[in-house]
Length: 261
Image (cartoon, rainbow, N blue to C red; front, top):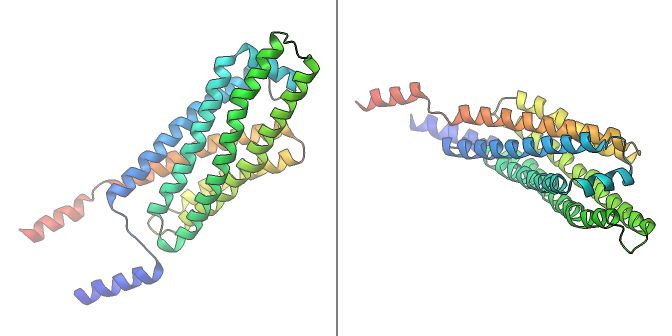
């Protein structure tokens, strides 16, 4: 009996397999749920901003008017997007706990890329929250500055922020998500269908970056909104799987009690 146990342990060690405790699955599952909740609110507010501001037909003047007339909604949207970005990094961090050892290199690469993406995203969100909001208010109040100068400063801020969010941050998240999802695929204790749900999400995110690079901003925004919805589905699916893994196995416990008695 001890020889079999030692053999299985050696095999697990060679293959890099791990069996995390139920508490680990439960904790990671709750992180996924929290990230999904924050992402839902961020997506709902973002959709409301796009709808009310008609931002799919993007123009700097239209955006500045919307920000000046809806300061609270704009600030809430920026704060929720920043929070969702941080929660996404925490999900990448937690994936290192539940994957097999041989897959941890992939999840760590995903974590590193997501950290870079989050840092760039937070910088852009702060510029949109503070700088662009102030410029929009000044433009509405007919500041002493020439309107043309304000519009030029606004366009520079918008251009930098969108470039940071779509071309840099989103690219980091997309590549990091692809590598982390492959790590989940290589983990024996998790179902393979999590891989098939996750891959389209990150490929959609990558497509949004490529489309924006080609100058199709409205299409890119639509793809990124779809990616946000897909990320919510993926994290909820992951949370459900981890919740099932965290539940005690009644058959094993009953057999252990019978052996004890």
